[in-house]
Image (tube, rainbow, N blue to C red; front, side, top):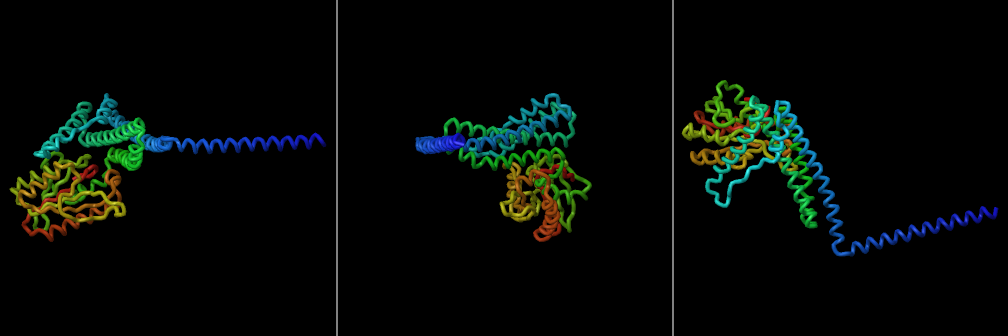
Length: 380
């Protein structure tokens, strides 16, 4: 009995000693952290570490999006018989176009148009060299896929550049600014990846709203012509008015050259046009409803400059009023499968176009309607 009591006493004593040891270690660690936090630069290094980890997580997602887009492009090229699919995809990923000099703005639009067209032609040439017998619709899908690969690759490389630079310079301010925009870029990249699948299937996207509206008028027109590169035009009569409808040539995945088309048509008519109506998708603000419609003045067109200014210049030359009808949607909705709300809005826009023509023109007038946007999956 005596030995049992001694054993219990010894166990309690050992337990107390272990608890005391843990307490001392806890106090030591606590004071060590306090001391480290008081050291110059330690807090900043900790901030840099955690911010960099957050950015690296976003960068990993961007890298995966880029790799997946390249993989899909390679598969598409191989499916159509390309023997240099990997090499061609890398060329697409690293392709770039240098902006024209803007310090001297004289004729900057013509220079920009030249560079954009040259870049587009070069991409087409690269594809056709590998796949000479490719049909126009499949070629346009590869072109869009190439653009997506290029965009995702560029986003990934730029974020990686500033992450490495921030860590190298131990700059908390570079990293915290980068951290604030990475979530938006990841969301954008995710939308691009989804868009690639949609374009490869040939499904109309939100941005196809303008061509869809134009196709409602063109469908009953038997004779059509091409007023400019990758554009289709048709002429019909609407309540005594001469209505000329323009859209990109579908169902290819292209936006065409609507500015040049309008310019050519107006000049051919000698400027005898009473009104130009443009219809396009537009980015909505947070809180606005997808599919909501707005009316305004000006050229409804998301263009770097050459196509939009072509319409503005010819309109000024002949004093032609320009009307704009837009259907609002998010960036993701614009480049992915057309939402039901946008599709339903197309019928409302068609009626608004008709009402606008009735109210602002007279019988005998000539009106040009332009359906602006990517016409993937939308025929004429």
